[in-house]
Image (cartoon, rainbow, N blue to C red):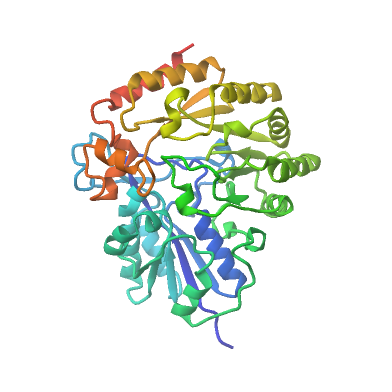
Length: 447
């Protein structure tokens, strides 16, 4: 009997000034693992960010509703960032643990590595370098966000044997066939999200929360966002398939916390989120749902707010970005002052508390004044909800990219490392860590 081809999937380290697990899983990579396993491949998975690695002894699965800090090791700052007065770290498991985990595996036929934030690529480089020291003759394929948005840079600098741009669900079986010789017939349709295998969350040491993607793409084209680049086509799962997945993780694996990764969760509510919520409510499952990617304010009605509260939504994040409503057309067309106030009233009337409702406010935008941010913080607090500062990251190919590059003290085109939002790359004169401390204090104290 011929042994199945063995594919290893790896979630790389993060190199940064700060990192925290705010319901952040490599959902795309785990979905590919699920597809490959469904088609008969032997799958191994290593997570360099694993908060529940056996060596940690960590077992508090539901503390902080699934969130928590990563392990970290201080490392040297990248070239060009030596003047930043903050500690730079490798976030994730120690290098030796990863080396030992690699050595414990049977030699794979193919290795897939994902990538997230563009400026985290040094962690990708180190991960691939560590892999090649153990498996020098095994091809390493890189995909993910950095590989898509900075494809040429990734080809030159990642160390991968091949770099794939875009979603891997369409090409993964062809890619596997090219490198392993195994070519099973596809049992799914990439154009039908209901046919995709569930992400292989069970390959993790522990499932402290489950990410949910009920749709792909976004009908908006915000100047600061890459959603339409990463997922140019809008696709929806059926409500029944979403509920079935939630039940799978809860009943078979005891998952309580679920994080929606959708960029437009509430859009087309009548045929999407409303049927999902009504079904969940009838089951009385006592689950907690979170929206770290934010929901569109315009889509919040009294009905959706009440259903979200009854279904167990615990963390509501609104994609507000700014309260400078008269001048926001250069950024997006998502919300007016009237729509914002109406949404807040609906959520509070449904039963959500100030602590549960947060409004993201972008800071560090090109040409953004401190006064504009101060005003936004006050408007949000006066509405009775919590301002949540979101540091702007310049993203290649977005419509705001060239303005960001022109405003930056760094040459953003030369190296993705300079787009790190911890640097406030577009606000050299306006922002500092003292300014950020002041804004956080304003959020805490402003009445």
